[in-house]
Image (cartoon, rainbow, N blue to C red; front, side, top):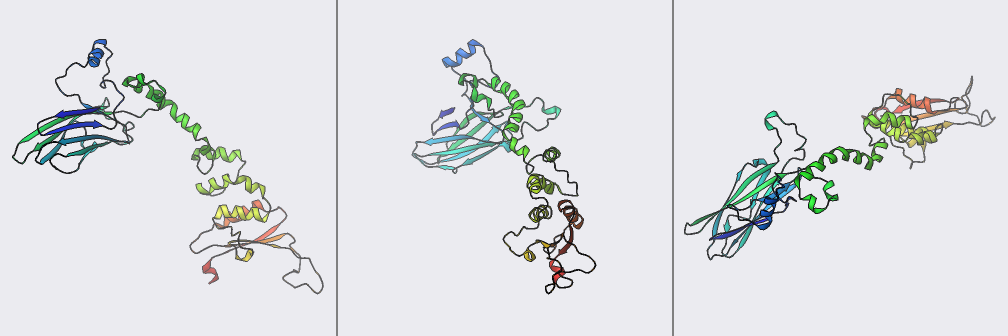
Length: 350
């Protein structure tokens, strides 16, 4: 809607960049006589207000176009009155001087909080107010001291954005009560639609709500109970199937310790002694004359045929839960094997 006023010094037009789809005011009337009078264009004693439909969390704009066809420059003064809350709007201009035979624009920016409809109301605020009125006054002052005032009324209509209106014919979109009625169903059904659209996020342990983790854990048969953080639990549930696939192997044990401790895998390093999680398998051919070294390949008093060593190398100020590490190794190793555990930090080596 564009509103134009013509005076002696300047011409002013007020344009809404978010014009509402309402054929009448917020209080809709369906009287045939009133509808006919609007279509016939009956004269009005005051200029019709420019309407701006404002959605919470979005920016609305009223553009004021000022045209001057005189031969002398003018000084302009702007002011806004009405019941629109002061923190909702901001006026920006291109300056206060309008040269001769020039035109300029001023913009009224409107914005309200995205949770406007979710805020609790006090008894004094009921019912919730959605329609506000204001006036933009532009005063033009000539070098001789002559002044001229222009009043441009406007209305700010706060409405929730609605998706369901897009499915209706245009004639029904113009009726405010239809939009408000559909918003009731949209508020009820849209959360369920959003869940279905983002169902993958509910089934991924890394993004699922915390209340879903017990179900996802049961789904993959994950029953490991240890003092783990929430992030560790999410990661272990996510990779439970891979842990199962490599259970009882060096690769599987290293991967499990990597997820639980946060130490890197270091797959690019070929030497186990250089990895942050080093696992050494001690296999020996037994007692062979001429090749046996006492204490290395031969142990007096018995042997450990299925023995391996786990060596963790943690950086400085990095804490590792030894009890948790041992619980993981006891769970993942073959039942007939034995192991040694060593945890090393840079301070230990120095």
